Image (tube, rainbow, N blue to C red; front, side, top):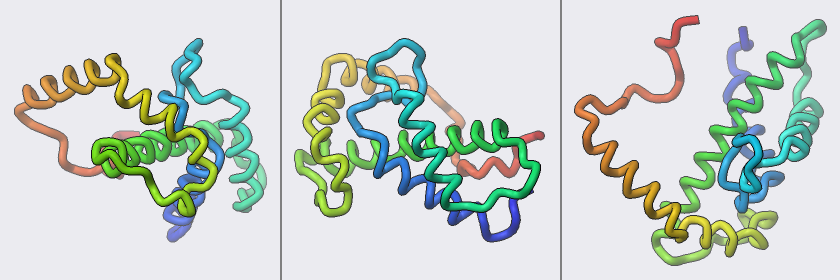
Length: 148
């Protein structure tokens, strides 16, 4: 059980670590054997920095906590790329690089990936499939109804 008031700062710290340390040129958080997947070395770098920011209780199961942190990191990475795509790529503009200074050198790779034929075909297929969904999920991502 996470102490009250800790999960928000924890997720925020993870988001900052991902934006600062994971290049946007990568397209997938995990996809074995893909050149476009985030390497384990970068994920572990984020994990080590996260451990420096938070004090974990004695005797905690590091692998369980690390797996959950990687899950949150993956979601943060996916949302960051989605945000950059919708707010900048689709509008044909670049972000203010003072906000994301470590990402500027990867911008052209990111844009070319989003404008590739493969990405456009995937986007079109996903749009068609989402319009077929008669009962879209709109309850949020918190997972309160998730069975444990």
